[in-house]
Structures are given as C-alpha cells and as structure tokens.
Image (tube, rainbow, N blue to C red; front, side, top):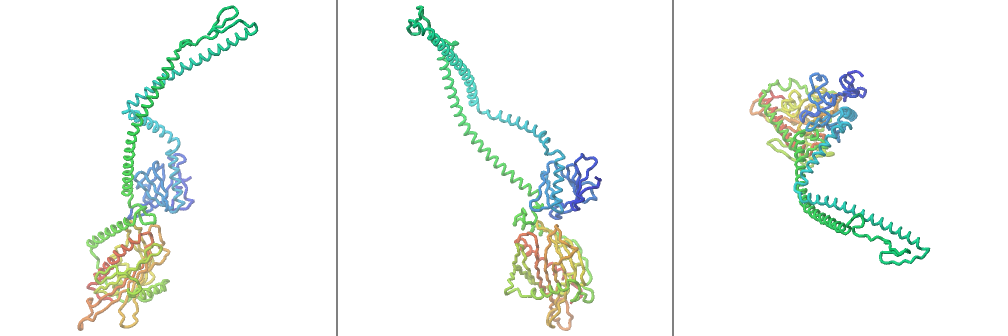
Length: 603
C-alpha cells in the first residue's frame, strides 16, 4: 500500500483506504479526510482536515497546512464517541470538558470514521481484557484493603460492650464443644457396657438351660450350682466409666447453655439499640448524599451550559435544547449587539460621495427580454393589483406600528408551523422621487451602505439592464440558523393609465432557482416575494419658480412575503419582524435623502 493512500470523507469509496506509516506498529492505520467541525456560533460549521493517527485525532485548517502543525488534538484513550441521535452525519467526541462536534458528508462516511476510531482505541490496548486485568487487579486490592481498614477501625470504635459479649459467646462456644464431646464419650461408653452385659447374660442362660440349676435371684447376684454368688450386671456408678461425673457435667452443660442464651439476649438488645442509632446515621447519610448528588447534577448542568452553550445542540432546530424564552432573549441580545456595531461603524467611517444616481437617459426600460420575462411581468402585475389595495375591509391587516408618516401592518399566517406573516408598510418621504428611491433599493452598488443584515452577496447572473439574479447570505443571529436567499430583482417604471396618475416605479424581488447557487447545509434557504412601489407626488411651486425638492413627496408602499424556513419559534419571528422592518425602512429612506440632497432631481 502506498504512503499517499488515505481516505477523505468527501471523496469516493475507492479512496477510503487506510495507510500505514513506517514508524507505526503493524495493524494500526492512519486515516485522514475532510470533516465539517463546529467552530463557534458566529462561523458555524467549517471544513477541516482531520487526521487519525496513533490513537490521536488531530485537525488542521486544510490539508496544505499539515506541515505547520495541528490546530488541536484529542487523545482517544478516554474519549467518548457519540453518534448524534437525529443528525445522521454528525458525531460528537468528548474528553472531559472538551467536545468536538463533527459532521461527515453522509451517514456512510460517519460510520467509517467511527469504525476507524474504535479500531485505534482497540489497538492501543485501552479497554482490552489484559489491560483491565493489569489495572483492575491492583485497584481491587487497594480498594479491598482500604475498605477493610475503614471497616475495622470504625465499626467497633464505640461498640465495646457488644464486642465483649461476642468474646463471651466464643468462650461459651469452646466450653460447650468440650462438654458435648465429654457427654458423647460417656454415652458411647454406656452403650458399649450395656451391650457387653447383654451378651454375657445370654451366654449364662444358655449354659444352664439343660440341667435346671438351683438358682435364685437376690438383688444383683445369681446363685449358680456350685453355691457361689456372681455379679451378673455391674452397677453403673457416677464415676464408673472413665471417671466421668455425669451429674456434674449435666449441671455444667445446663449452666453453659443458660449463659449462651443470656448472652444472646443481651447481644440482641445491644443490636436493637445500635440499629436505631445506625438507622438514624444512615438516614442522615442518605439525606446528605441526596443533597450532594443534587448539587453535583446542578453544577454539572451549569458547567455544560457554560462550556458548550453555543454549540450545535443549542442552535435552531426541531431538537434544540434551548427553550423559546431563551431563544428570544438570545436573538434580542444578538440584534442589540449588531445595532451597536452598526452605529459605531456609521460614526467612524466617512461616506464616499457617489455620482448622480442614474446616468442620463432611462436605461431601466419597461421591457427586457430574458427567460424570466414572463415571470417578472406576472409579479409586477400582482404587486400593482394586490399590494396597492386598501388595508381595510376583508384584508385583515392589523396595524402593529405607527411612527409619524410610517405605518406597518401584518396578517398572521402559519403553514405547517412556519410563520408566513405578510407585512405591509406605508411611508411618505419628502425631497425624493420614486425613481430615486427604487434606484437605490435595486442597485447592488449601494446595498452595503444601507443594508446592515447582509453578510455578503454577489450577482449570480445579469439578465438585462433592469433585472439581475442575486445570491446573498444574512448575518447570523444566534441561536437561529444562518439564512441565505437567491432571488431575481427587477426594476420597472409603471405606465400611467391617464395623465393624472402619479409617476410610479416598482422594484420586485422574488425567489428563483439557479444551478450556480444550490442550497447548502450551512444555511437555511429562505423564500421571498417583496415589492416596493414608489409614487412621486409634486406640488406646484409658487409663481414662476422651478420645481425643487421641497415640492416633491414620495409615497412608498412596501410589501414583504417571507418564508424563513427552519424551526425558529413563531413568537420570535414575529417579534423580530416587528422590530426590524420599521428600522430598515427608516434607515433606508434616510440614506436616500442623504444621497440625493443637493443633486438634480431625477423623475
């Protein structure tokens, strides 16, 4: 196998082969490849070059930077590898308080990474039977010794009377055993004597049966035919067998058993009293242990939140660990920070004055031949028909904000749990024309001057002089996922039906699909349908004076239909929309007034 044979999680299956380094033991293979690693809540998932070698997992910013040293590494001996419960491409690797969140391209590559990590852990000897035997035997011996020492020193520290009674029980046991042995010997001797006497008696009776001897029984003696007396049965005196005092032994045995019973009774009383004491101590220890466990769990949860708050488990999603109130607070705090940053940047930077907004001549014609022409015309007609309708009647528009000339309306609409509330805002701005307002809203050259929510954007395709396809990503507001949008933006001058109609311009932005801007797993693709209709109202000047900016007024109607996608709570989306749309409209119109001040009027 060649040295450059490695596998990449984003490559093909035929590239997924291990490689063995010359300095490595046989059987341990190095694996490397590209995985997405969670960096932080600002940058989210970033591709990193990950190397698995010598039971160590290291990562680099890219494969080209491996010679400059890794950016981080984990020893896998005590690592915990956790495949994510819901994300089939994700695996989490944790060692103590350090956690790496990694994502493979697909579940198959994740499975191969996990298998490779387990192989390295097994080859390293950690967790093997021999390793457990080596480390476990000493641990068990130490534990047993310490446990015995603790028991021996504490169990009888205050139990002297019980210990003495137990010693007495041992003494009684020894005495009782000796007495039982003595009595057993006495009983065995008695049984042997009785057996011998019965045999002798039977023999004498058989010998005298034939001649009928003159015999008479006199107490313990038998008179045989020769006139002599013979003792047939020997009386069993108390000291007749082996000198055993049967009566004394019986009395001692009785005293011993009585002593045992008394000692046992005393031991039982002591143990009952001690049981009450030990039960109280046990209850106290159990309560103390419960409080300590509760404190430990609470501290552990706080530590996890402090260490990993902002990780992928807390971001927007169906299984997010953050609740709706925390989600709202985090979004509001992030928006406040963005506002402060924007205010500082506006005060510090000096604006570059640009030339007249539109070169001479109307390059924004009402026509424009391209493949989306029919769709653009349809959107323009829909906005002119529905967006200009009055907010009263059956439209169900609810007034949510009113600040001077600006009014913001909303209709609450949800589909499959996703907030799709249409928003409509009306505003009147003095000193600018509808053409100028639409120009600054449409032209991407001025986008970053007034739009503060965009992270970056680029024109994917220019369809005509008045229509482009734009891809833009918005700044992430943690814990919400980052959003991107791909839309066609077209600018039109609306033809007047009669001479009394005001001069009207329109910009419509609506989502489209394009091969060069496919959705990715790093952003949630939002869908939009936005229309800005601007009408110019002119009041006649006094006398023969020329029309100035004091005589013009732009009436703006802004309608937005946005499908944010994702899993953000409805209350958060509505609160953000209510907060951000008025700010956007005031910021944009102020920018247009600033840019057009002192310049020729463009109708």
